[in-house]
Length: 114
Length: 108
Image 1: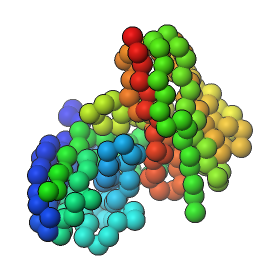
Image 2: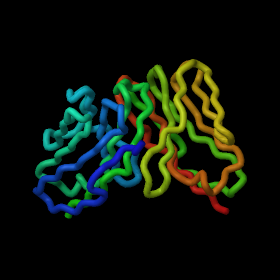
Image 3: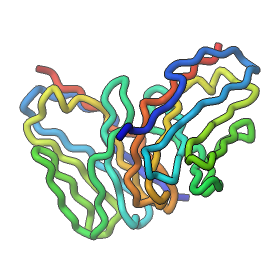
Image 4: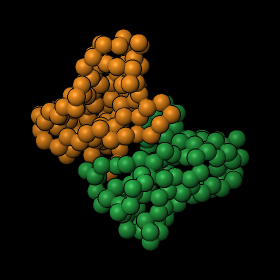
């Protein structure tokens, strides 16, 4: 079975633009979480979705939004990009979405905002 | 609010030396996970600790959960160059949280 997949792998945008990142969880996993990892720091939790509903939200502005589709894949949208949004965006899938669940991370999308 | 400190931030060792990273919380944890992230890679799950005083081993890696469930450690015996990377603790505060990580560099 394939692991967690993310697309695109790299992305370059300019300030003010909008971006959509995509994630497909491991087959059978029903929960997807999104993280932002700035260089040299640990992953920061953005959102968690389980069964298409938002289960948790981190301390990020409303410019960040996400959704989960019936096939459990997910999209993360960021509007009005700022230079500080440049980071590695990681998607993690878990079976049930409970915090003790093992998280399986995808390779990430490297976003550069110029 | 919940606070977690992971120390040290960086560690440079000679191959063959031991390495330890610590994760300290201001509040009691229900469980804690550890992840490793290789340079340019993504976090990979290593272990989960649940019980007070729990000790788990994976080859040269030893993980401990404190008796009070407020701290945890990861010890690597006789480091190898393949151990290079950043080690993160992920304590359970009923939401997903990662420590700041300890970056390990191993000199051959």
